[in-house]
Length: 242
Ligand SMILES: Nc1ncnc2c1ncn2[C@@H]1O[C@H](COP(=O)(O)OP(=O)(O)OP(=O)(O)O)[C@@H](O)[C@H]1O
Ligand SMILES: [Mg+2]
Image (cartoon, rainbow, N blue to C red; front, top):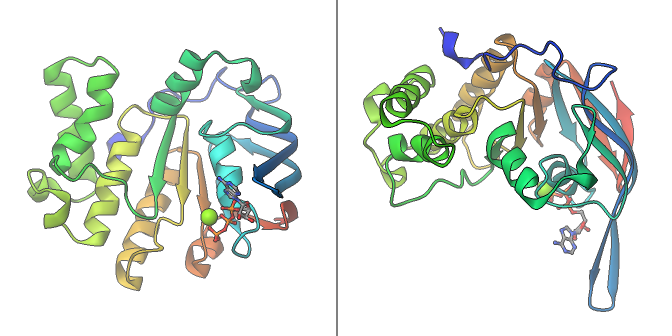
């Protein structure tokens, strides 16, 4: 099972000189909203190696999503250095940043972020279409991914015709479509009942076994415990990493 989950690329030679996939050093993020200045991240150092499964925990407002958005190149830091596979992200062109976001990183969100007018199949197919994959290969890849997340019989269903756990599995299949180097998930079980949450946890565990690199923000102790490494964020800083 889950044979196709592998990113198929291996990690040889793909990372920074020291084998790191993500290297954050002294990352700061300051939001200025009118007269209010919030320092969401105050000097974060974090290294992720290819093949790691890391959970991120911490109180509400501590900076977890801000951290994930920076790692995912959805947001830029106010200060510090972010190297992705040894390359300084701050020097990337806008095109390169878009390429990283669309193909090198797979995102999974609490509210699934599926396009409501598209079927499960079409949601998974879309990133492959943007990546320029030919129709037949696209169809095969989308079917393969949906089958692996257990939705072979739901491909033509729209998101409103699926359960929360099923929607999240579609979102995971979509995140995997372009064989990303890194999967980022922000509270992936936050909108699910505990049984669906466990299913999603098992999918993540299978992905990790297949060689994927996962960074998962969670309030769910079950996920935090299953991840072999857990990072705790408080007040914009990493206060524990073990
Ligand atoms: N776009 C923004 N503009 C201004 N302030 C922001 C923005 N995004 C986040 N913040 C502030 O930055 C701080 C960190 O927010 P963040 O969303 O990273 O927290 P979090 O740890 O993900 O919290 P939660 O567990 O509730 O999701 C908070 O004080 C928040 O109000
Ligand atoms: Mg958050």
